[in-house]
Image (cartoon, rainbow, N blue to C red):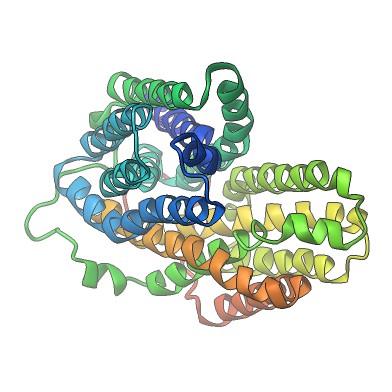
Length: 406
């Protein structure tokens, strides 16, 4: 049993890491690709880039609960394979497009078939013993955070060596490797919490929302993602604003983004240990409060060194709180409804991802410090709400038997 759940966890973690890395190999360079396709007007490039980058998470947010519901009914593995195979096809086709609308259409198709990210979390939770679910979820989330941190670096090198079109073919190969990992390494029959639901056991979306703390945790996931994604539109501008020489702004901003990604991954990884010692309510509330302090350091910053202090505090706190929220939600879901449940959490997460750059970009046009003040106030408010409203449910201890509890 021990080796099988770890083998399953390795399969879904590696597939997630490869998939998330592959996605970010090429997407950051989409504006350059539109230029290669003959779009010369900067406004047109921005429009096509925005539409193409936004349509995939938008459709994924809408459809993730639907795919999760099908996974509950017909099996998680086949749904992840379906999603990853579609990415192989779409990314391969991207190398041969001739018009900007071709890219948009393929990205829309990609959004329709996406959703493997939430399903790999479900598969990790299904495979792990009950007392190791937090560890398993954190492990996969670590991979999902590190992949996008590495992808643009690898993608830039590939595009430089092989060209932008061929970079899409390399990405397709990444997804093919992810498919093979899931096909040959993940054994759904060895996932102890996976079982085909009977008619009486099937969970509706309405009943899922009625589970203890679930709507609150959807709000927590939304808030954490909203705050986490607020830095992207304004951080390089703020680095310049606090006195960094113009020539050093890209490297300083890049280092800060890498620190945030790395410490976020650490937070995901250590959350399981914290949940063995404290309730999810306490872990989420305390980490959100610490994250608020990290964001407030940004508000007070007059130079880049204070940013280097605030970023790891913020990053690790967001990582811990996110994994704790997903783990707490998993603990109230019946095994037969985890696909739909994680799908709903993904919808909340992607909604935060979509709204954050818009809101904070507009706010940043007035005052960049106001963005970080909003982050600090938002996380402090989140900590207070969780501390006051979240019902405490005891987590299974490290020595507890790995039995399913509904």
